[in-house]
Image 1 (cartoon, rainbow, N blue to C red):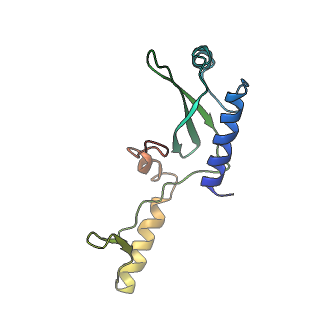
Image 2 (tube, rainbow, N blue to C red):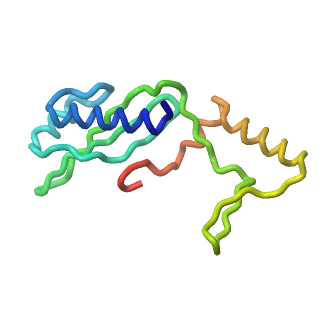
Length: 139
């Protein structure tokens, strides 16, 4: 199971629990859940945020009379999550809207691969998550 499959399955499972009035599997604020349930409206799926050791799912409880309540449910991933940045050898042709590779001397290509591999290390990779847009309806 890849990360997208894991996140989709967990998000749907949590949504089903919330819609059925059950507490979801994961970590969440029980006080916020009580407030959200008091709204009386079923939850809607919000965004999903990834961190190296956590997946955060947001569920929105709408309120036509006021502010919606956002409940965040956090689950542990199956393994460490890494952010894979777009490598420097990927080139986007603005005019064509296509994304392709690029030509390099072999020595430069090996150096670029090593730099990319270093980005996946537990020491460097967490900083790549900062400032990332969440995944979901608005992201």
